[in-house]
Length: 360
Image 1 (cartoon, rainbow, N blue to C red):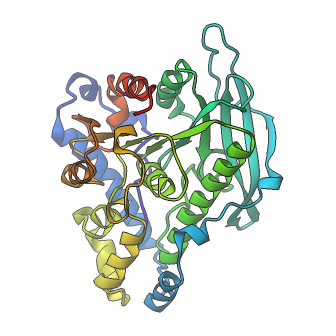
Image 2: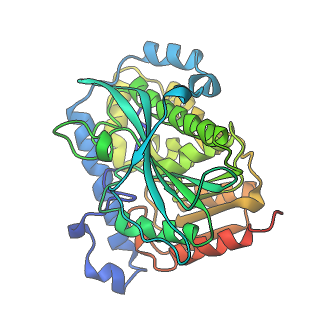
Image 3: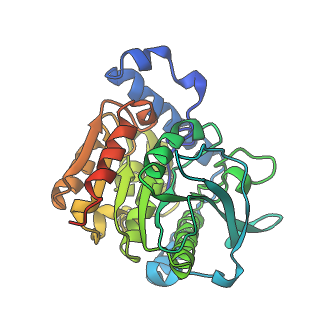
């Protein structure tokens, strides 16, 4: 079992994988689906060639003793440090001064050369006290190149007087292990290891949430993409969020991994190693928003999704939307890995922020 989103999808789009035709023919389903599938098959090859899943007994014991809320309790609030940040540059909005900082604190993630450090980028337009903040949770493979796209989301938020606190996931950007690429190592073939990295990520988000509240922030909303959308939905079941927007969220890990035909060989290896489908189902359901309750107001929830998504089938996303009567939705003729190329995406998000400016 893995918890997975292919390396190049969401916020890491390689130039050679974006033919000009995608800009001219956004409805070309075959090309867009192929981009998703290519990434999935690439990761399957990596996992099957470096196969070390652990044992079914270890996974069962881990799940039997797992409480997401207890396993993600905030840590190191007294060790949060702030320093200037110059990695991603944004211009100040007219009449305002944008302050860019980096917050960090010890992480429970362990690298071969020692413990990792949790990192958040802060873009604020004044003292945090009494400010509105959007906690930003990106997807797998977020990179410096991705900033060319996601800065459009940032600007839509900043011009509406929100501040942004951006989460750097483990194994990404400055948290990348030496000699590896951003995102490499986040998901492996190890079953329990993948659970732990997700839980540690949520723990870091909860720590930052608590620190922001301690600093006097008036309200905290959220934006999450792909696996980040999955994390954000789980976070919203534990902490109180004012609103959330999720883009191509991984709503059902079973559908994305266990029942994904493009990962059939990997599943065969797991079954051959003694992992029953019942055990795998149980594992995937624990971290899948589809099997948890949406606790945030549906009227303050937005879902941006892709018609040709090969990670989360559109039928699953639409079932989730219908189940909770989420009205703020938009479907694009894109795949999981190409949705950021939709020119309307950023304006649609801005309209959502406008719509929730008055409390429902």
